[in-house]
Amino acid sequence: MISEQFILFGSVLLFICIVISKTSHRLGIPSLLFFLLIGMLAGSEGIGGIYFDNPSITQFIGIIALVIILFSGGLDTKFSEIKPILGQGLILATVGVFITAILTGIFLYWFLHIPLLESLLIGSIISSTDAAAIFAIFNSKKMGLKNNIAPLLELESGTNDPMAYFLVTTLIFLIINPTTSLTAMVILLIKSLGLGILVGFFFGKGSVWIINNIKLHTEGLYSVFTLAIAFLTFSVSYFIGGNGFLSVYIAALILGNSHFVHKTEQIQFFDGIALLMQIIMFLTLGLLVFPSQIVPVLGIGIFVSVVLILVARPVAVFLCLIPFKVGFKDKIFISWVGIKGAVPIIFATYPIVAGIAGSEIIFNIIFFITIISALVQGSTIEILSKYLGLYIPNKEN
Image (cartoon, rainbow, N blue to C red; front, side):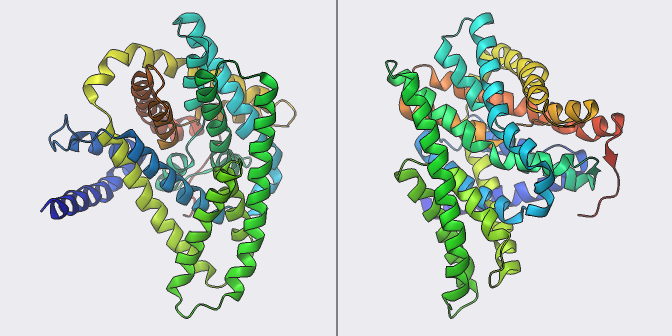
């Protein structure tokens, strides 16, 4: 009976999310906001009354979802589109994330007197942007952007999660082991990113050859086989000390820009399963949160949101783009489109699982900031692009 009830609730929630996504597209608000709210309404303090309070399971679902979403994003990314803005995108995805995390953490430390490492941890968790949220808005509005801004935002959003992940896991390690030296942290960073790139390159090149030569008897197995490669890439990278998320994206980027059998069908498969995992991930995160616990952190959440949107993100963007010929209006728009998504909420489960003191409060703060970001920034992208003269209407999907 329990299994049947689970299937019933799951299918109803999935159905509602898909239907409600049409409304979110018309309003220009990221679907993630509605998915999270549906999860909250279905949760223990909502009308659904489904009790769910397991950060470990949430983290597991989040990792599975992120691997699929990053792999799908890598498959869809064309070298020809990102080549002109490769340097800008990678600097924003690494140095930009670092600056955003540091500035946000410093403001929390100075003004709210939160311990330094915990302040930096909050800044790191909330430092990356969400590609799915940004481009769902672009597609729903059928809008384009001048000056290669769209591919730049796509590249940054698709590649900045690994840096944020490294900062989050490093700070958790430092909080638990405060005597760790700076040298050890630098070595860990180089190892994590270096191995992540190497594993991603190896699996990307290898997967092209294997998929083209394995000769499976059923066409549908090719997509399943490629899915297995995605998870294997993440796992191998993780267990040898590399950044698994970075490896997955690089492997998919190489595969997506190569010729392999049933390419169109496989890309469509991953597009569909990535959307499914986004919905499942947001619903799970919505179920995990207790709305009554968010109320006490509203003040801190608003403060961090203001610092993040109006100070940390703009400073990071302007500093990172100094070496490049990027217009002032372009920088303003890029600064504003730093929408937060599921990744910060997933990363916020890591301190809980690690047993960090006050981690539940951190989770609630991050959850609230994500909602504010999606609501405020997500609903004003089109308006700002028109105001700055960067809007290209009637873009074909």
